[in-house]
Structures are given as C-alpha cells and as structure tokens.
Length: 312
Image 1 (tube, one colour):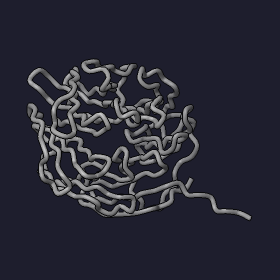
Image 2 (spheres, helix red, strand yellow):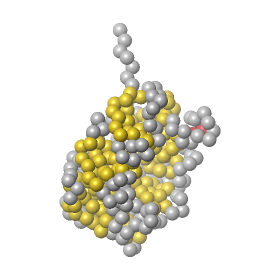
Image 3 (spheres, one colour):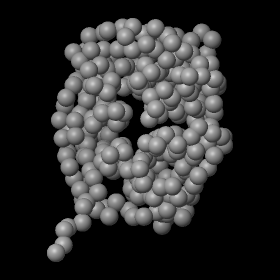
Image 4 (cartoon, one colour):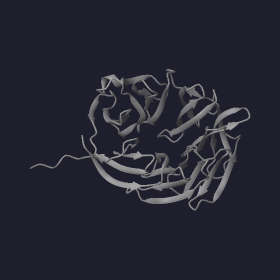
C-alpha cells in the first residue's frame, strides 16, 4: 500500500519528535535546544529555545499557547515567547536520566524525582500547585506519559535501571493508586485507542506487538514478528500507533512499516515509500496521518495512505 507524501521539511538534528494530543500539530525537539511546534504543512507555528541539557519529554497545551518543559530539576511552563510562567522544582535527575510531562483537561502530569523517590504528579495548569501525587517504584531512568482520551487518566511508559520497561495507569480520580499493567515482560506503551478501551504496546527487542485492554492489561491480540517479517532476525521496533480506529501502523528493526487490523492485529499490508523517504523514526496520529524522520539530518515527512484512483 503506497504512502502519499503530504509535506516535507528539514529541521536541525532531532532529539525527539512527537504528536501533540488534542491538536493537529507536532512537537520537534532539536539537539541544539530548539523546541518547535509544526503544523500539518510542517511549517513552524511556535518556537522556543531550551538549554541543551533539557532532554526530558516535553509537551504543549492543545491550544498551542504554552510549552511545558521537563527540565533536569523542575517542570517549567513557558509562554509562546519562551518566558517562564511558573516552575515546579524537584530533585535533580542524574546523568542521562530525565522526566517527562503531558497536558490533559485535568492539568499537567509530570514524572519527577523527590527525596522520597520518583513520583508522578498532577499539577494545576495555572500555577503549578500539586493536585495529586503517585509513587513510582522502582526508580525511573526515562518515561513517557500518554493521555487517555477521557482527559482524566494517563498511561505511563517507564524505563528502569535494570533495563526493564513497565506500563502503569494513573487516574486523577484515584490519587496515590498506581496500577501496573500486567504481564510484566519488557514492553513499551505507545498509544491508547480513541475509544479508551485498548492500549498498544511494542516489545523491547524480541516480542510481539500487542493490543491490551484498558485498564487491566488483558491481552486482546498479540502478533509475533516472525509471523510478519521475512527475515528471522527482524523484530518490531518501539514505534507504533493507531493511524485510524481500525488500523495500527508499526515499524520493524529493518525500517519496514506495516499496517495491522484492529482488534486482531492481522497484517494487512506493508507501506511503500519513495526511495529517498526517511524511515528511522515513525510517529503516528489517529486521524490517518503520520510522520517519518531521520534524526541526524532532521528530515521530516508527513504521510497518509494513498487513495485509490476514482473509476468510471
């Protein structure tokens, strides 16, 4: 199945590239400290400059008016000009560790370090006051917060020093209660379905692409890489998402991108790109579009599925 190129841009070398929940826009963080909001033509809508050591998971409000940055020792809200609105201080992250943040209707969620251990906090968007706190155990090295469509819950993908990756579910209606999503094998939470009833996980190294039930993690479908890829050494990469309610788009270690049906994860087709298309990174949005990117060159392309030509 062919991909249709919608836009192409060249940015500084990239540290991260993400969708912005609730907005038809994207967030690109350059290794030079640039943090930019891109529209669907991949034009720059907002831009601020961060210190180069601010390498946590950053976010933007859905109206694109404010940046939320996960700094080494605080969570910071910046206005569209880059001026600080408020900051929530915390214990510094150690070398190569970082926190993350996300914005929902409930407030600003952030993974932070405290003297008592790592915590997920829900902060008031207006002034940074902590509304709720959840303990995270064991300590995290990195993390990503994925908003649930209801605005009051998040999924947390956490990595740990023992090379384990865990998935947690947190809710504003249940402060102090952290639910780890079983089973405990090493995998990454990559997306939550628009219905709010399913989560998508990808494996670390070998393992299946999986759809699991929200919030208890019961397996709905699992697709091993050996059933999909022709090379026995090819496995699923960590990049995947719901490109539509009935379709998942997932990447392989061989930079192959494959469409799967929902909810059975049946392989439908491999996406075909032009030869010069970057494929190192894949960022999927649920309205039928996705980005591919090459981190070093900063090349970013936006795609949709090519529509069949009209007949008759």
